Length: 112
Image (cartoon, rainbow, N blue to C red; front, side, top):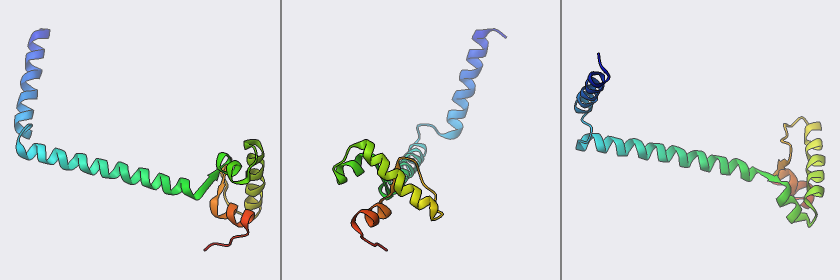
């Protein structure tokens, strides 16, 4: 089979499959839009979920702004707070600390 014959055969197969699936038909396009909307909704959900998680933690830049200290000192504060949390049996993330715990220790605010 020559390359040209193979190419023609593939084009015919693609055309047959497009016809079988109804590519370009109103139903096909409607279903495509529905699927794309579902994908968009899933992406928005993941983004919102990630943002909720990120709001639960505070990083060095924000700690530095709140306390009016350098980022280096903010990292030191975070290390100290995370050490305290670890000693209590909590899982910690380097460079971040629970926003609630930070507020509790800095402001003496008890939440929840």
